[in-house]
View (cartoon, rainbow, N blue to C red):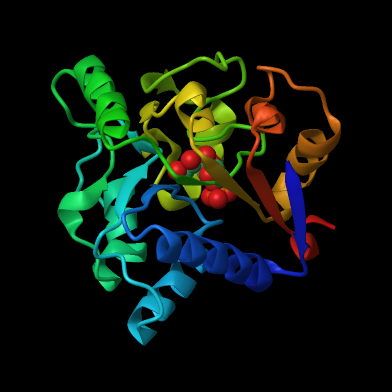
Length: 239
Ligand code: F6R
């Protein structure tokens, strides 16, 4: 795991954006794994601006998002499909048919998980995966205790995660209890990973990631075993 200490959120986002762009320029048909949440928004802003300037094109890029809430419609402003459209896809030259987010409204959710995992495999796997981290160490929605071998599955969200995400909902009762997430095994199969860490709430998670042991009780610790993982940390917010 390589650690890059960015001086603030802006620098973290810029460094990540330069890395993503370099990967797309090297492989215009990149399979890009994406995350939602507050942390990657700055990265997406940089990518949009580079795309508008003509520095990078998403025309041949395929994306796979990590996760989606169960039972939220894709048009619900809190769904991750909606988030991705608003924060990135609507503003760049990507073909929406090449953007994939698990369908939390599927009538057969187990089948949806299998299909999503197969779709990633058939595309040739994820070339570059962007990750954020939960205060409890979750990656995707893989909460503490998830097997490192896990594949795309339905998960029950930790109360800590529901509380953290309740800032986007009208009330705690509206926060979904379940989600579809790609598994830790799925994430670890990515050829390259960039983990972004920002925010005072992530201070302990960062300490544990770099100094703690590899344990299923702290899902992100598995990244210590990945051969090509870069952690870009916003030092200003963590210190
Ligand atoms: C979202 C995801 C989650 C978030 C994590 C941090 O697709 O995979 O693991 O990355 O919950 O969220 P923020 O960035 O909002 O602190």
